Amino acid sequence: VSDSSETRALAAILDDRREARTRPPLSAIWHALAGLPDPEVPVISIVELGILRGVEWDRDDPSTLVVVVTPTYAGCPATEMIGNAIREALAAIGAPRVRLETRLSPAWTTDWIAPEGRRKLRDFGIAPPDGVRTTAATIDVSGVSPLRRARVSVVCPRCGSAATQLVSQFGSTACKAQYRCLDCLEPFDYFKPH
Amino acid sequence: MTRDRDEQLFEYLLRLGDSPLILAQRLGEWIGHGPVLEEDIAQTNVGLDLLGEARLWLALAGEVEARFAPPGRDEDRLAFLRDSGEFRNLLLVEQPNGHYADTTARQFLFDAWHVLLLEALERSREPRIAEIAAKVVKEARYHVERSGDWVIRLGDGTELSHARMQAAVDALWMYTGEMFSPDDCELGLIDAGVAADVRALAPPWRARIDAVFAEATLAVPDEAFMQRGGKQGAHTEHLSRLLAEMQVLQRSYPGLSW
Image (cartoon, rainbow over all chains, first blue to last red; front, side):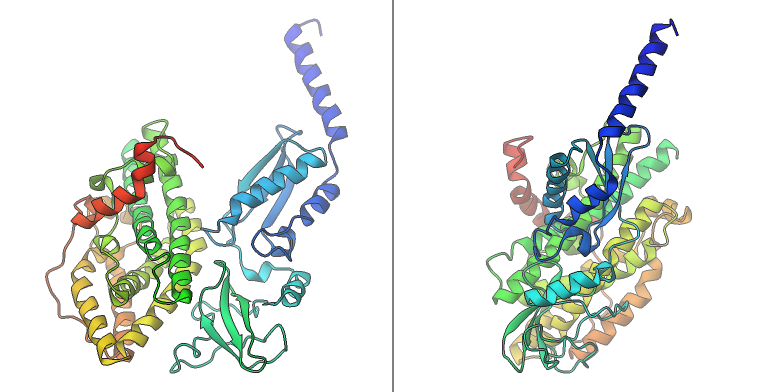
């Protein structure tokens, strides 16, 4: 062990082990990330939204945490904000070295929104996606195009009525459409099945 | 992959990325000018989706370019520092917004093709292409539902909206031919199972156009001379003007960031 390069290698391994002992457990990391709200729909967390695909320590560099995120929509402007929020949250619990990886496949779908997340969306006044995704139409356009048959029914998150009408296929963010309730007459957002 | 194949792939990825990029820029021109608030929001949301798609293709193009011409250009350099002759988008998407029927016709003709293209690319032997296609095809399907609805509403609307919708379709029809005509770059990659064979997309595209136009009481234009050249960099004058606006900040202040 007199060879200095071997000594240095050994020291590096010991350093790594020391760091590995002081790094936070994965459960604490998931807990911290579960507290991060989605920037555009702050009532649910990024974990409930289903965009966090994995968290693990890098095999080659055990002091670096690899966080795998998948985008909802390709052009979602919140993606960058979410990355920054993840870094800040992890630095705060003692994991300052984070590598964010974007995974496109399998593509995110609203089916990945947790049941608890759906309930929170409804309580917040956003109708959750109906869970029925088809390759063709995902939305009932009979409100704006009366000749088209109704294909899905969206329930008003305020009064529970199923008598609702599409106002526009797009709403305040890429993931939502605008509806109005024909009973309580209130407008509301619908989280599009995607 | 060989150097030649990488150069071909780079060229092909520019074609995939430039069309959504330029159309996104056009749709962005509607910000604050939409006929009603909902449409203002919708046009720009579609534009945002297309911009996100363009970024994925151009970032991948930059990675491929780095393999034969290191270090390669990133998505921003490719978007902001190329001249019109280096853009590979379809002529259709650079056409001006005009009135709402012009924008609607351009969008529907493109969307109907875009969905078919992405569905074919989901089966690409190049996994990076297949995964991007699988990601954005879901957005494209939503777009074509919406633009098709608008073609029907305007076509089967008032006498004036019908006349404008028909005129818009007639004027843009000559830009649809190049969507289905592959050149040497594409043919090589089609044989390799990497690129989509756009020749096969013509019949299903036409079937969708026919169905929507029938409901919209619009006549499908007669076969006519088709303009080509967008994919080879021979653009209409409109692209230079569009780029002047899109690129002005990076041209004036190279390297500027937010």
